[in-house]
Image 1: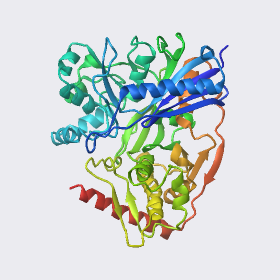
Image 2 (image 1 turned 180 degrees about the vertical axis):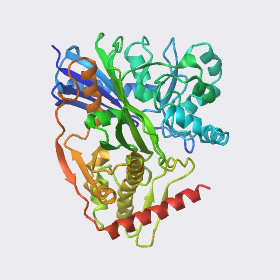
Image 3 (image 1 turned 30 degrees about the vertical axis):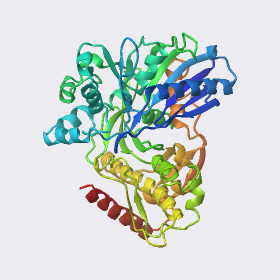
Length: 496
């Protein structure tokens, strides 16, 4: 019997593929980056073919490193950047436009119009989300409105819309299957949070034709089989799909109500398992589907900060202050504090709990004595401050105090960031030995969907590599938070 699982983790800046044993050991891994495109201020796009090439290269590399025959793979799990939107020709499979990335703000004015017309309350009630350019619906409409003939073709059923999971499955099956799972569908503004079906009133509001939509499937279960992909043999079962943050929640084994994880990737995303009944946020968070397995749906509260690791990339690529992202830790440690500098990394607007589409990044407290080291430290602290905003709102919504935050993602490797997160949040922060929780979650879900494991009892328990405990005084914490809150106020007012 095949004893290996393939996880395809298609992210914002690249794709990571993992070959995982049924016992949870990663025996093959390959990450492949691809270019980001910024055609105008606030616009972020991907070339779909470059994205697809990164999938092929990462999968091939992971299988080679694992030293196995791809025909011995038992199942495939897919996890992905979520709200990023693609539209393609149903017959040829060719995209009609670049992928519009979740960070993209080109539809902010349209969202403002809808909110001014009073749509916000209905949207939040039906979908659990807020009206914001972050989500997929206005991106789909923009493509249909700005590509010649696209809306007419969509009305005739000639075009298909999908988030990245849909596009990857479509390519893995040579166009035979057009699906998305409930977690990704719950990020579009088009699916009913309770009904788990496309909502006709939302489709009308956002002007998205029903004919372009994929079929909604559970997070684990038989989805499709591979065909004509080239780098994988035909007939391999695809048995799991989940948005990246939901996959990380599963991968961090947050199976109990109240469990919280935070992933530090391109952005920072905190999720709390709230069980079988969706908790409606009153403090600027959104409610989303965590997963659906065996007909049972689990929900989560989520807070999203649009820029986290991307701020480190900006220091590297935009300012040239560091040569690699990993260099930020050493540079930041050459000073003992930011000396009053605060960086609000609103490089793509402010997400939860502010939802300020027009906010832009702000650095305050700069003096003649400010150095690259102070900016590096302020960047790591800024990420932790964003997450503090999220978990603070989460605590208020859930009506229960947090005791621990499980962290993962690339930036979680920073001890300075993790310690400052514990200090600000005043709870324990636990980092596992394996911070690839997103891919791990996709593999675990694939095992469940293939009937090979139950996901919980059979999953290897995560091992904590380090636990960070709060280590500052109440007064120090209050001083830090005051510095942050003053910087955020300036960020928001500067947006006009």
